[in-house]
Length: 113
Length: 111
Image 1: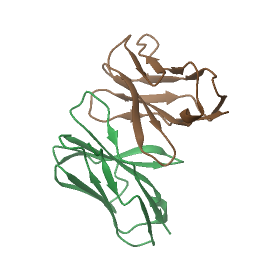
Image 2: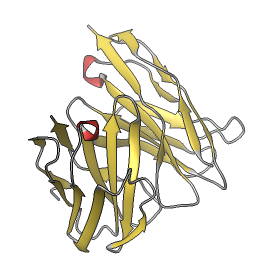
Image 3: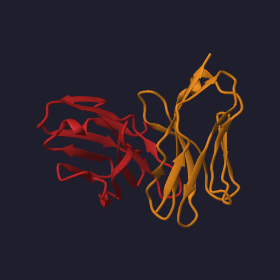
Image 4: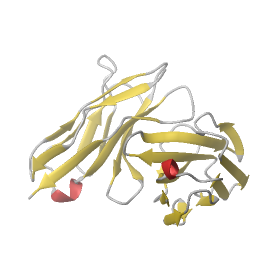
């Protein structure tokens, strides 16, 4: 199993530009989570899906952020327009059922200049 | 609500020293407890877990025991190595499908 795959690994963009982060969960996992990690705030849950349906998006910081999961093998997190304060590492994670832990991807390091 | 409190780092130890990273929690119901490790430039990896009181999770020489009476899940290792240098996160899952993480403890092991 290739694990959770995120792309790109690094993204540098200018303020105001649209950014799209991508995630491929582990096949058969029915939960998908998007996290943001910064030095100041640690790990923050942004949104999670169950069977491709968004369940809780209360962690999405504002309307500039949106996430989709069009099918069981793909999810996107979009920021439009991006701002410097969005600079962080964004992680995707997936899990099967509710009893175990998550498998995390390697993350996307986003820098907005 | 659910919360996890970890000892603040950074923690610096010499190789072969004994490691303890404290973790306490508050939760509704009966949580499952986890330790994750994050090596530099990588995502979080599940290190060990325990799903009920008095369970002991173990992996790669690390251990943690689920103590319901003290609401604790302290991480221990008898002899750390330089390769154990990383950030360690305690987490719980209770009553919902999301993990609640502590703020992480950075461990540095020096030769």
